[in-house]
Structures are given as structure tokens and as C-alpha cells.
Length: 431
Image (cartoon, rainbow, N blue to C red; front, top):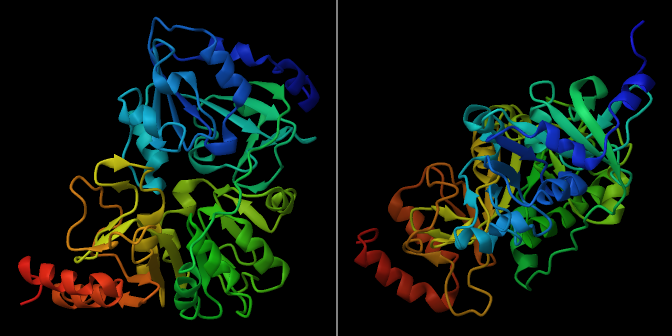
């Protein structure tokens, strides 16, 4: 007689430390991103203290510091695919690694480069049918369901969500239990200029548009100004608090979307307790693997797709450095280039890159002749569409280098425009 779901769940019930029996010798472990990190399972791995056969743990955006980030567990190496405040400094000290990537390609890159990988993730408690939900974080982990072995930590406080983020008891090696709060992200502190930048973006978004909003105070502010719009849709990498009000007030319906009509699509969720309560058991919000949510080809299928993302600085060519200031890495590319490309390929689509015209102290312009030496170009010049500061919108796509330069100088802070004009002549972009 075939084992019942209850039998399978009971037979695969384990302690966190039992993951050690499944670690690939000299291989790779894929760790869930952000709240998808199985805290007690990683604790158990670190407690080994030393690995004779080196093991690499791959993760994006960790939410807590770890000894192995700083090389304190011999033989255990952290490989970051998107830096957070917890592994930024260890990276600069050479104690861990960073893999450049477009977020949409992370699952494919992992499949190609990792050795005998094991996936360890946090999930919600299983339902009566034996399905675990990956909860607030799907990303690359969801893309591996059914392909790679999984060891699951059930966090009693992980919200159950829906979408292509369900892993069945028959697909896992084992599961353990834990009970701790999921990490909240407080609202980001903005600057006075945010309101004007957000206004310039919001007034250009038409009714019926599908929206993607990236990380940052300005994208959040844009969502707050869309309250008078109608029949908007959501297809985003990060589902944040700003989307909740738009859904609850009926601004977002998803009725004009060509794919996933009437659904809000995302791959991750980060924010407040209210946000987590909203997505819990909510069939209107679906979590999908990142190689689907961020695939430019799929994004482009939505008409009037509007992507809103922030950057650190923009040069006269329109190149955007969004992950580092010079060689000082802060994060990684994330989904910005994915959505920028998808939006400009969308029928009627638009991509907005938003930034303040100056640094926080007003001492330097963020519109620059050349990016800081060593800067990583996150979104390259050929797909940058609209650049927005508090002084206006520079429409770059299809414009010449001279036109780009003039338009970008026009939205720079007035205190820097004369110097920028001189430098534009010096570098030959204006004659």
C-alpha cells in the first residue's frame, strides 16, 4: 500500500542537524534569499566548525550576519549573488565572493556552474495535501523545485502564499520545524525631492498600465501617487507595501493584463507585518520563480509595461551605475536591467530610472560626465529610456549622444550645470 501524505510527512520529519548527512562533499548549497533563509539549518551547518572538503553556500540578500561570511568556518565559503549590509564588508575584505548576474538568469547560472547542489529553504507548514509553500521568497529556489534535492525548514511564522512556489513532501529529502518571526523591512526614509520625482513619473503612467517598482524610497513614493489611476496591473520582482493600498482601493485590478489576468505577480515580498498579513492565503498575489517574473521576453508581452527603478549615478551616455560607487560594491544588478529591457520592448511600455540630482549633502552631482572609475554599469545606455530627477525627465531612448548630454544636464542640479557643460565640451560630446 502506498504511503499516505501523513505517513510521508512523518517519515521525512527531521532535526535541523540532519541536513549534514545530505551536504554535497566539496559541492554547493543553495540557500533561500532573505526570509527564505532557513535559520536553524544554516546554524547547524556552521556549528560543524570546520569542513575538510570545502562547501560553498550560495545566497542572495542575507538578512543576518553569519560567521562563514567572514571566513570564520574553515572550509565553508559564502558566495553572494546580491550583497546586503551583512556581507558587503566581508566581500570587500575578500572573505566571500560575489557573482555578477542579471536576476532573471540566476537559476540558469546556478544550474550551469554549481556542483551537485542541495537547496535549503524556509517554508510555511505543509497543508493537508503535503504541499509546503516557500512563503515570502520564491526567486531562484522556486525555479529548482522538482530538479534538485530540497531540505526544508518549516517556520511556523512563515505566511503561506500561492503560485509556482509549492514544493511537495515527495520532492524533499527531509523537513524540520522552527518558530521565529520573519524579518520586516521598515519604510525607507526619503528626501524632500522624492515627491517631485515621484510626481514626474506618476503623471506619465497611463490607466491600464502594468507596474514594476524596484527598491527605494522614490519607487515607493510613486506607488502612493497612483491612487487616482484605474485598472492597473502588477508584475514585479518585489511586492512591497505600496501595492497593498492600490489593490485594496480598487486601483489595481489586473483586468487589462495579457498574462496572469486579475493576478498580482511577484517573486519576493518584503516589508511590514501588514504586508505579510495581506499576502498570506491571498490567491490574488502569486509568487513565481525569478526566471519567469524577470524574463524580459515575458515582461514585454504586457502592453504599457512601466518599470520604475533607482540608481546611484548616470553619465552623459545614459549609463546607470546602480550597484556600486566606483569599485565600492553595495549590492548587485538585481532585476533592473531585466525590467528595463522588458519595458522598452513592451507595446507602449516605459522604463524610468530615478535618482536625486545630488548626493545627500549636495556636494556632488549624480549626473556625471563619466561614471566613477571602476563603477559597474547596471543598465547600459542602449536600453535606458527615461531618467528622472527632481528637475525633470530626460528622454534618452533614440536620442543622439549630444541630445542625451544636453537633456541630462537640463535635469542636473542648477549649481552643477555650468561645470557639466564645460566637461561635456572637454570630452567631445558637445562641440
